[in-house]
Length: 201
Image (cartoon, rainbow, N blue to C red):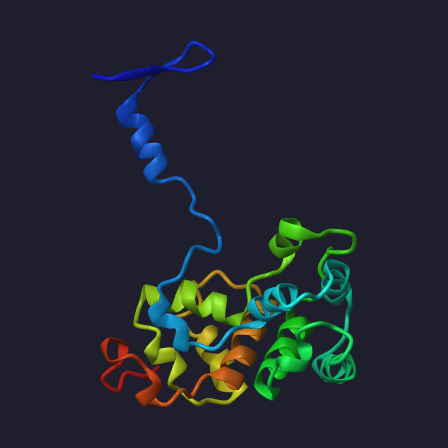
């Protein structure tokens, strides 16, 4: 059996090291298959896009640190379209998705941070959550093709078939708001290999 001696003199079988590596936690935001590009971006992705468009780290940190409701965020985002780089390029759906995300997930402790730390401070958005959780039981198409009101999504998320999904109330609210704004995708926009056969909740 092959072994490896650690810096503390402990001899570890290399097969054990392989097992530890295989079961080690994976990065929270793993690279996604491009086939899922039809699923609209969520608030975290939109904020990251603002940074990519030249928005200052301190502006994004200030947004994450602020406490407004969805209507307040919509007003603020509209007023700020010409002062925060990248906002003017967002369409109405993206602005509403970002407002809902900030309503649900902010404030977070982001003041004074920048770069990778700022990106890491951004909570998962509704898209992140559905991509992470929904596909453990069914293909994502089942979720994103349904046009349902917020209350129906919240009922689903708290139903016996979904209650074990590890979401706190703010995350559930974010998922519901994201789906109200972005689900109901027509089946002809879904890649053929991901088209569901009429499945629903």
